[in-house]
Length: 95
Length: 227
Image (cartoon, rainbow over all chains, first blue to last red; front, side):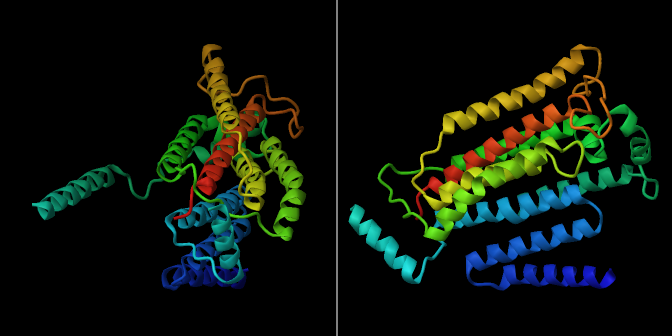
């Protein structure tokens, strides 16, 4: 049990560090949601299933979604490659 | 001048915190209600999930405060980020996998969300968790097809009515001579779906309110133009 908890805690610490160190904002948001997901597993191990569900739904799902949508609103969501071409083609067609 | 003001503010805050800390009896747990609640809740409230008995029964007022805070936060985010120019371009529809997946997941998410809300007094889960899942269910089609129209007046109506029902049930309990949000309608059979008095109704109202609020917030955020 202690090994499982240690692995989860190390995973959380690593993801939290990744949030700080990652240059790509989308990657940082994904790492932040990993912290929440690992924390929800920890809550299950600590026999708090109610809190675990809330953490997974609100912290892992909704919080990351709101952060990602805010990034998009602020123009920090860089679309690359094939999607970029599709988007620009659509915009020129609309205009 | 500004530095001085900041220093004054920080010093004042530290003084207030220390004044509070000086009053706290360290080493003596101030709240001994946990054991009492564990012993009494099954007979008193009738909810198989003790957490729900605490969240809606013993600490119902705190839950009302929580949904008020959520409402204020959602209003703030919608106000700051949810604007949109009339001629702003929209993202194109998502790929086949996301569109088919969204159509496939929608009824399942709806089912899981309502199941978690309605069984909140029996098993882990409840209005908040189920409400977030409902919001995700209604946001998924929007992710697949960004131009999908959203019925915002309908969402506001659901949110307002369910919030009013929550407060109304609390006031009815108050006028019947009990405390605000005290569970009514008897305890019922312990462990059955129709038990724990008004707690399932309160959780349903809470779930619908949270779901409608978050669905509206997410759709407004997604509908805002990308800079």
